[in-house]
Length: 183
Length: 183
DNA sequence: GTCGACATGTAACCAGTTACATGATTAA
DNA sequence: TTAATCATGTAACTGGTTACATGTCGAC
Image 1 (cartoon, rainbow over the protein chains, first blue to last red):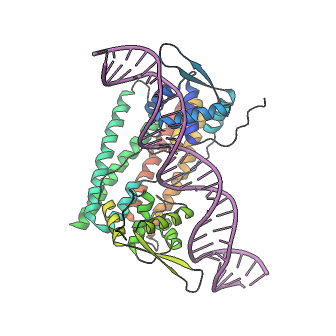
Image 2 (tube, each protein chain N blue to C red):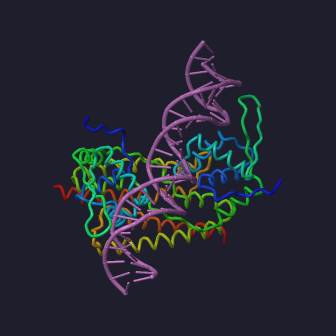
Image 3 (cartoon, rainbow over the protein chains, first blue to last red):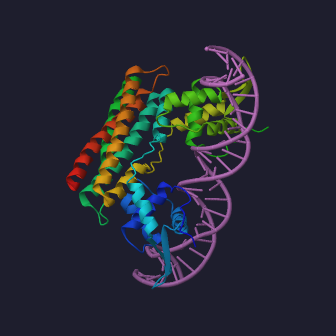
């Protein structure tokens, strides 16, 4: 056997799983799904079938090892990072390169085109959006207060909070503009 | 022939093209690519080959018509919305339903995992991000002042401005936190 | 005579989603 | 006995992207 050659760069989801795997040994896909959702669910939420595929690839690439166990319950596959896996994770987190592609927000795009059609339609769009953002903000503020059981990452949570608050401010400003235009 | 039956819901990119097509008649794929970039480029930027594919689908679905012309230069295909195309666009913009899926920002995810590895690595990540956001903000502020030739949509531009400013604030706050932790 | 802007695509790939399939174990 | 939770996947599709192919025309 040769030392494993990583074929190519990993996807962000693959790094996310690597990151989660780095926190503790012997986690199953099922465990990871729950932890993913609690720890970074508001910014990254892969589909279940996708996660299992990722785990298989990580193992194939020599970044993790599996161990199938069965103890009271259905059998599960426990994963653990290899040295190569830890290296890959460390290289990723310490590389400050970032691809900043445009945030593809369907709401913004719709608003852009709605404005030409009718200011009233645009305004109701913004009101609906505002309500959703406000609801999310309330949820996140709740999480900030509690810390929950899986302690939320306060730094990234506050990123979401800061943006949500700025978004609400923009909504109010925009609604005034639109109402002035249609009234 | 039957009246055209739209097979299924369109993708957001398809609606974006529909929206652009709604602004004026007889635009070619090439024209649209430039207009897309100037009008909504900071929030939606499909690949060139993808745009041509979208145009083909819109025509196939009866939402637009093509006309191949050739006048001094390579031949081009000019598109124009049909009645059904205008209806589809109108239905889309007036529907306030929104799917708010988590914003998949690789930076945030990386930061989350970098923090465990080392506060210093996390801080340099945030500094790099801050620089990028500041550069974008300056660009957008320039656009806000000028209005450019294709008048930018001020409302959506201000959305980007508001978020960018909030992001910078969060960066500064976060850097303090990280420096306190590592110092 | 060659460079850059105009103009349209094809083929292959990619990261991910949805819907479905399967089965064990525990609690009501 | 039936529902909920645990646990892992497959097949088909979606909505793109990258790299490449092809050619016209005007300006220098």
